Image 1: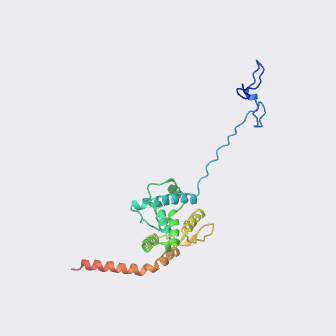
Image 2: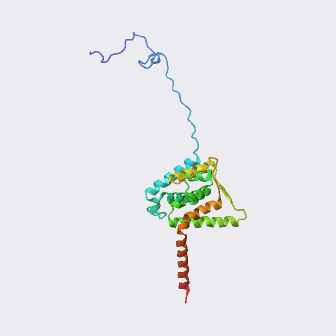
Image 3: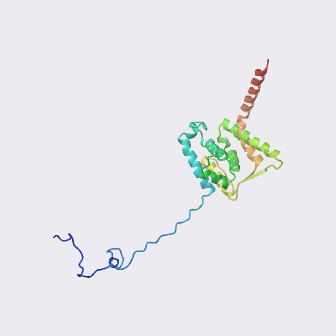
Amino acid sequence: MPIGEGHRPFQAQGVKIPIENVGVRGSGRRPGERRLHLVRPATPEQPRTLLQEMQQYITTRQSLRENGYFFLMGKEPEKINLAEATHNDLRAIMFDERLSDSTRQIRIKSNHVRMKNVFDAYAMEQFSAEKKKEVLELWEGVQRLDRQSGNPLKVLELTPAETETVSWLLARIGVPFSAPPEGFKEGTTSLLFRKRTAAAEHQQQWEQDQNAQERVFKLTRRR
């Protein structure tokens, strides 16, 4: 029989060597030494921050957008700039009834309406004329209702986590935003003024459109 075929180590007849006493060549283990398998305790998953929740939410929405979902549903034009897309995403947090985990956590961890107010004020210049008009009318209406409440909000403040999140949203669309780490703070009148300033170039056209609508209405009523 060729050497190596069927070869077994010598063992005296009638003597049995327990397998656990056999060393493993090259393993560094001595005969009789058992291998210990250490199981590390699972590290508990850390809760996600507000910024991480927003990043997950925006990433999911953008993926749907790129696959044509919002266009096919009639919610957005086929081509939309990133600033307006983000505005729509923030708006959806308020009205989306089919809440994802990230949407629900954003609602829990923040005042998402205040974040949207600040985002709109600083992103306004990147909106189309139509979107500027829509956004300005919205926040002017909110301001009127706030004044009528008898306890108007004079200063809008964001927490450090909200400030960090808005900073990321604005940086994502290329808008500089400087706020102290302890949190953003600005007067509500100042925020509305930012929106009006960004929309000022379209104001004359909007007034002309309004006058034209009123004239058409009067002519249709004339006998």
